[in-house]
Length: 227
Image (cartoon, rainbow, N blue to C red; front, side):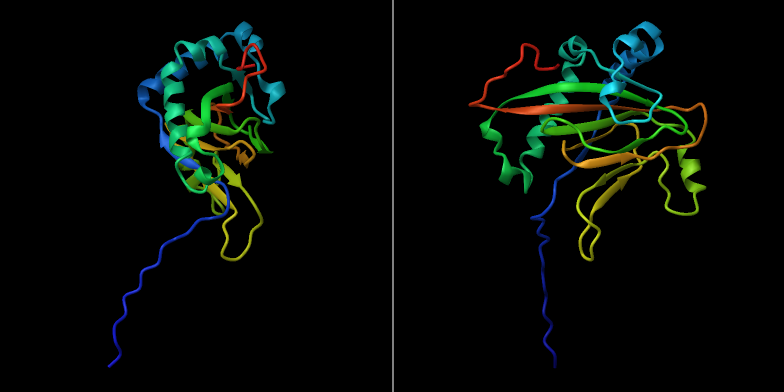
């Protein structure tokens, strides 16, 4: 009689970058959307805080969130991002490359709102800083219907992260259809892109940020670390 053998295997993930995902509470989304509505809806403010020359996107409007807003009304959002950084640095292999106890502070170097409409897209690109993030404050109401109508490789409005080459037994991409409140954090050097959608007169709105992790032995070399 053949003896029954119970086998147990553990997944080991020693290669590649880590991406983490969470949720932004509704009250924070409301705070961010309120400021974004103000910036996007006022032509003078939209021009003053236009951030599109610094970005890769083919997008209708991209405005920087003012540093003074981040320091005041946005402080609860900064706290959430800080907690996300702590979690990120605790997960292998990230915790093997940078030890959390050696970090003195987190500096948000830039944060901007992307107002994407029909046909807009973000080509494959990378960010500045050490870690980057993106969260979603509005999604087109018709996007699920549009996605369901695609007969091949549904992708409308999706974000796509890419790293390495496509090979057997090895993943090289992470594609996600965003929902309102989704937030991602990833290495700033990780290539990513955003697919367009086609439904007219509906907005896909996201907020992205770049941050720097300052070691305890380092000193800042700029008067305003957010610039």
